Each structure stands twice: as C-alpha cells, then as structure tokens.
Image (tube, rainbow, N blue to C red):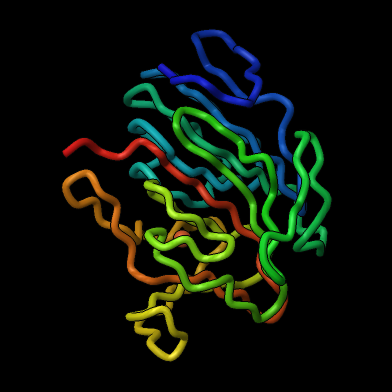
Length: 231
Ligand SMILES: [Fe+2]
C-alpha cells in the first residue's frame, strides 16, 4: 500500500489500479504516477513511447529493477508485487527544453544561476519528484549531499536522474573541484543512471557529483527516495 502524505490526486480504476490525475504536461511529455497492485496489468498507449520508471515493487513485465527506467512502446506492464511507477508519455518533442508547467500547480524557480527547479515537489510514498532545467553548457554545482552547497541541501535520500530533453552528463569528482573529474556518465533520454550513493550503516554516502548540461541545455527529472534501507 502507498504511504501518505502525498500531494497528488489519484483516479481509481477497477482492481485497485490508480493513476494520478491530472497529468503534469511539459516539453511534449505527459507525466503521471501509476500504482499497480500485485498481478494487475496496465497497457501503455499504442505507438507512443513512454518512459517507465519503477519506484517501488517488482514487475513481471517489463524487466526493470527498482530505480531503473527505460523507454517502452506497446507494452503491457504487469506487477509481480504492489508497485509504484512513474510514466512520462512522449507526445513529441515540441522543441522547448524548458517549457511551461501545465496540469499540476507547479512553477519553475531559479535555485542557482542557470539552474531551474519545479516547485513544489511531487510527494508520493516517501518519494519527492521534481524537474530540473539547466541552461546550455552548465555545471549544476558539485555536491555530495553531506555538505549543504547553495541549492543542494544536505538530506538523507537516494536520488536518480532521468534525462527528458537535451543532453546531459552525470559527472563524478574526487573533490569539490572540476579538475578532479574521474567519471562522466552520458545521460540517455529515458534511462536512469545507476544509483550513485552507498548506504553504510543506514547513512547515505555520495561521491562528489554534478549534473552537466550539453549545448542545448537539459531537462531532467529527479526521483528522491527518502525511505532509507534499515541497518
Ligand atoms: Fe545530487
């Protein structure tokens, strides 16, 4: 079952399936949370690409682990256990990497120079979900979630990012210094990067990292999980 509180509204379908209503619309995407009880199915829109992110639970189909996401088309999603998913249906690139936020009562705020975040965060089942837009060729700020650094505050949570439009990289550093970069993961649209942090005795530990945008800028979604596995 889903834990409360949540700031989204659900529309209920037969057999306990729930879909958030209204959808969040931006940059040619229609985004909704989906709650799929054990053994239930949900069919993705015909001939439309949908980014499917599994936030909780287990699926029989498609093959996705928790905190993974990929693009699917014409697929019947089936839950092996009570599952929470987030769907971004791609209605077509409208050429606006940063676009108005419609459907939900959200707005963009510039949290640091060139870095925009949607607010308030969508809250569901101990996840907080938000969109980010970075202006072209911009480093979103090196941080490790231990020290508070301008727009990245110190909180215990497990985050993954999924690219929606434009190009971007998740970059890791040995220190809080751009010259100490040691790994650069290219963000492919619809695909979450592997989880960056480790959980050590119930404490979440991140390497220094930053999201870096390409020449067109980048729109991405962040899933923050505040349910830390117990020691
Ligand atoms: Fe981060």
